[in-house]
Amino acid sequence: MKTNTSSFEYNVFDYNELSDAQKELVDHARKATYRSYAPYSNFKVGAAILLSNGVIVDGANQENAAFSAGTCAERSACFYAGAEYPDAKFKAIAIAARDHTDDFIENPISPCGVCRQALLEYENKAGNPVEVLLIGRDKIYAVKSIRDLLPFAFSEF
Ligand SMILES: [Zn+2]
Image (tube, rainbow, N blue to C red):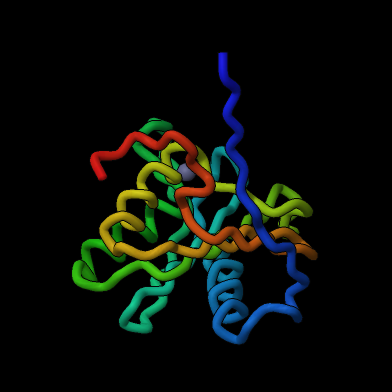
């Protein structure tokens, strides 16, 4: 038997330590939480994707009485960006959330497995790492690529 190890590094920032471009993306994601439609979970998620053309595309979770018809903030931004700007490459994504207290959640939020798989497709399409900013109330985790969040990803690439 042989044991392999898989790990990745990420940086932990205070908001003030971020670059101006990162701050702008974080601000977009936080604001996007206010455009969430989450009457069932009351968990309001916002996402913002920076594209290679400089455009930032926002998304927010959209729930539905038929739960599976709804979608996460990350995929709402991801698919809109892909449909509106098919030639632009994803550069970075920021994700934020507010809970039932209406305050931003304490610990940085992390995308669900389905969103990781969807985002990985766009990272592969871009041909460059897509930085992921996971936003908490006080701390922000900066992950260098989507692939870091999805070891052994299902992929044709
Ligand atoms: Zn998701």
